[in-house]
Amino acid sequence: MADAIQNRYDFVILFDVENGNPNGDPDAGNMPRVDPETGLGLVTDVCLKRKIRNYVEAEKEGKAGYRIYIQESTPLEQSDKEALTYIGAEDIKTIKKKDPEADRKIRDFMCANFYDIRTFGAVMTTFVKGALNCGQVRGPVQIGFARSIDPIAPQEITITRIAITTEKDAQNKNTEMGRKYIVPYALYRAEGYVSANLARKVTGFSEEDLALLWRAIINMFENDHSAARGNMAVRELIVFRHESELGNAPAYKLFERITVRKKDGVIAPRSYSDYEVLVDTANLPAGVTCERKI
Image (tube, rainbow, N blue to C red; front, side, top):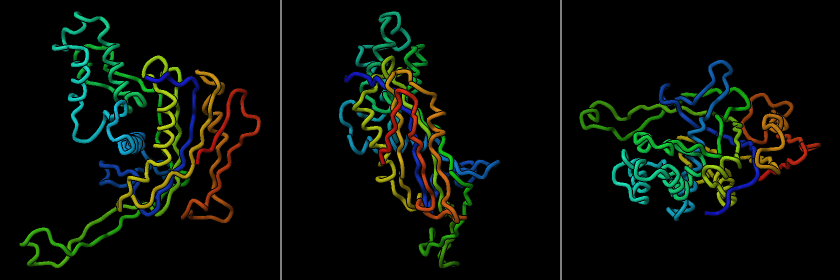
């Protein structure tokens, strides 16, 4: 495994949606997620990490060291068993008595083989049931909820279909009705963190992993287009790099240097060009640099 990263990073992602539903809420009929107090749109961290996982899976296609742990149609227990086989364990309940280093060995195996565990961490329930401390791995990369810059106005669109579902219904009607939610336009901002300290102590997240993360963020919507999500694109990835492992400045002070606002005269934004993004790079804290990667 490559050496772990040695620098802390804080980053901001700006992405937008046009005539689509960026992240439906299953508890609200799949309506776009909204903060009820402010009217601002929300996209969960889980949604964003899913897009990153999908890109890594598409680029690496199962290459050793870059498999994805959280994926469709693969039970987590199935992947967990690989680690037990690797260390020669037969009974998870007695493994600690036979091998005091079982926790570390299993953790290292899972981190080395699964990119998303190495990056985001994971709770591996099979191991927790066996009272192994490696069951919960805290990942060095964390992303918060994305929040829209301005309040959103979700619209419920009625759609029709000429293909009738059943023969009985076809005797009485020529079309079937349906509904979908869209956001006409919204620009979202998400903030994230990369801990070199956790990378070194826990997962071994490397410079190569970091470069892949940046690529995945920039391209996370490019291979995920669908009619339901409309047009989605990452518009900005702004990265603050610290010279030290623990950081040279608080993340919130760096994030405050990024201002996103509507241009003068714009009332209802309908494109990215209706906004201006200002990044104050003057007098950055000592040991901190800023790069706009897109």
